[in-house]
Length: 363
Image (cartoon, rainbow, N blue to C red; front, side):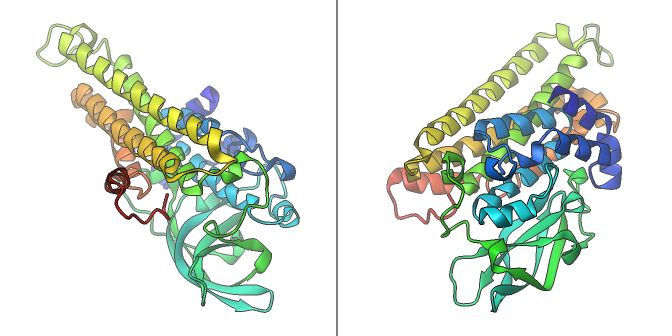
């Protein structure tokens, strides 16, 4: 992934300006298999261990957080193909570079019509939607308390130009909308109540846990890139100073503390993934699911602290658009706004740890 990260870094400024990833970056990611990491092997996917998902998007984010983010979202969207029949999955995943995206949140409504559904809704935060072949939206079916995901071809979904933001600009996370789109029943599935069709531990792994750890991987990669940026500035002599950054004890100590924090957070995340993976086939307890979410949240929040420290160490240089530190600061703080790694997970975790009645459906 080192080559992909370098390519992403090379096009990062252009991606921010255009508010979407540069096409060479998307094509290279597709060719490398990033978007089929979680697609079942039976239909041409890679069906990888969740740790490989994290390490892949982490490596991309070292170059550009937006590339890591789009990789994370489109890769995790592929999990839906483990919930539909193999015939439907093969129809959707027609080529090794097919790209699925969309939004899990149930912001739409679906009305049954024969062996299909009429789906209407509007979904914000559809990262990488302009690069997708298929887009999905979560919707509630009349009379069914569990929301489902509905998958439609890109040309049946409207993309609304709404992504005018401060961070993760190049993700192109516009709103998408469906207006009475007819979706065959075979292209709909509930990640809450349906049993995965594809066998194997990956599809027994909690979907929201997968998304959370992928987002955390992006944050970790962004922080790693920020520390690399500081090291690259080591020869810089600040204004009115006589010693370089690398020669200053306070800078040395701050860099080392940030490095230790990042390593610990990453190890904690990978440890939680490994423990959950061992038990996935037999069913995960709430404790395992919580471990994933706490590991992801801690990793993402720690990464944001590390990037903030790196930005400060960069001094006035970090203010300029030519410095990746200013972009990393904006991007990592945009990433931590995602509900799956937001600090609110600590409240949920605390309730569980105290043994209080807790709604765990989002775990």
